[in-house]
Image 1: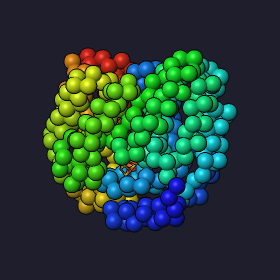
Image 2: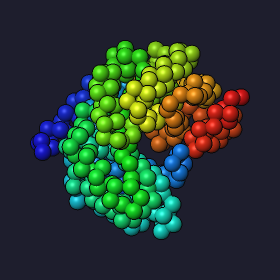
Image 3: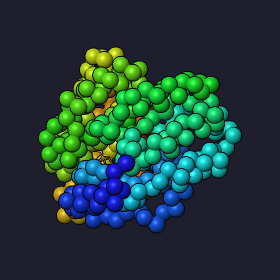
Length: 337
Ligand code: SF4
């Protein structure tokens, strides 16, 4: 384990370098998760948990303020285990435990970065999930690619198969924009196609599934049309990778909201950025019809947007319902218009 003060200092410096002005939630009760919600995925009832831990060490992605609900300082395994107890002892009813088909675990950064999220706590989560939620068929873990340790994942995957329903591991990676220049020079994702492809190959070899997070209009430089085209290019690319490695891939498509305390918020305030139209999201999703990937549209801004910075506007209610229904069915006729 590295010096935890040094990691806190790295987070502070990188946040400052990225001209982010948000603070951290150091006063949050470390025995409670940062957030959780229920959603309907293709697999069925799904729980999304955001554990409260030390924040993402990368910190630089242009429009991201997810670290602002995390701690700048280390959170040990004991309080994180209490967060897990909260999920299984207080949050989930007996019926929900039986009904859940999928759980997504996140710490708004990298669950597989052992410097910011305890391995002991991760193993404890798996053990409790195996006992308490016997029908979960997919467990998703969010992480940056550089923290993926294949030997660790092989052990975790073996443990997941010991539950009453064998649970498959899905690795979730932030991709955000397909175009290299947009992704790395403008958004500062720090992810090359070569890194993604080598990871996809290993995910396939281990029999895991892959989720790739994409954003619609993640940077101010994109017009509405170019934003749709970038997602369409991403859909074609992921379909090729799915074919090449015979891999199950889900594109998790997030329309961008204006996250407070970021450079995107500065652009928004100067009038140089507007969030994407939900209609553009619909158009982009339609490009996946007949392709080898599934799509989930994220419609939740986690309360992190500036006022007026959401992608949901008055009059969007019907389309929101259709997109929610699409998430559960992958029925493109709902969106054909
Ligand atoms: S998008 Fe993910 S990797 Fe990038 S700063 Fe935010 S939490 Fe970290």
